[in-house]
Length: 336
Ligand code: DAH
Image (cartoon, rainbow, N blue to C red; front, top):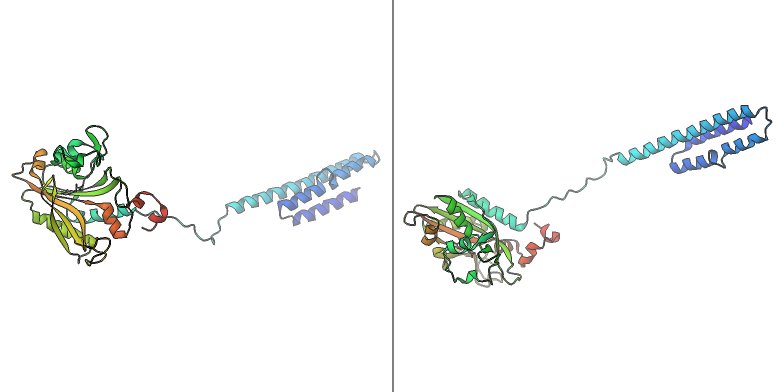
């Protein structure tokens, strides 16, 4: 019996040294410790011994059982610790994880560039509410009460006198109500129109409004500023023209065209074969508008302009459907 005990102890010691995995350790347990294992089997055979030596053998067997159990426990602890630290260890040879950096929306990029150019010319930025009242959106801007733009067709009304602004021009009024001349601001923002949605028009879009009011502001300053802007934005070799137009809040009014930068003026689908692209509306602030904000029209004059951003962005980036700008499709946005 003593021999047997020693033999098993030695075997167990050699064997545990070769155990590298938890699976292997389980085999060890089954072989030595489990109910049918070598050690319990020896305990069973105690019964067959003479009662005089049983207590002593029992003691040896207990020793064996404790030793084997300790071999098992130590190994188990070591293997589990190893497993754990393997999980946490950092493999410096792995390639880095790619970090996705977002890009600015093409509308934001276009707006940023427009702002940058006007900043350099001394303009500040002002903003106004998207939910406007009829007074600021129409009345103060000299729209007659029966003007078609007030029509339900174009304007989203919130209530009788409250609406979603249809252009950024009401911000002109809000700025002038708060500030005395000289005023030199650009006013970017969202505007809303109740139009049939198509590839060319959407129920919301962006505009940038400009306003300069001071003593003796002239139409030639308006032209000079807008030409300087257009050359920086579209390229110094563009040609331009001003066409007479009409807006209730400016007099005289004009629209500015530049040579189509796609066909360079020879005529294409985008410029509808005219060679020209209309880029903005502008004019000298109407005296009635100045009066509405308590500016003396005899003392002050000013110019204003407004442009749509989507149209510009679409031309610049060759986007042929306005709706795609609002779908947040990453396949589209990632290109910018
Ligand atoms: N508010 C006009 C529109 O939405 C654009 C515009 C034209 C703004 C002439 C102006 C301007 O400030 O002077 O169509």
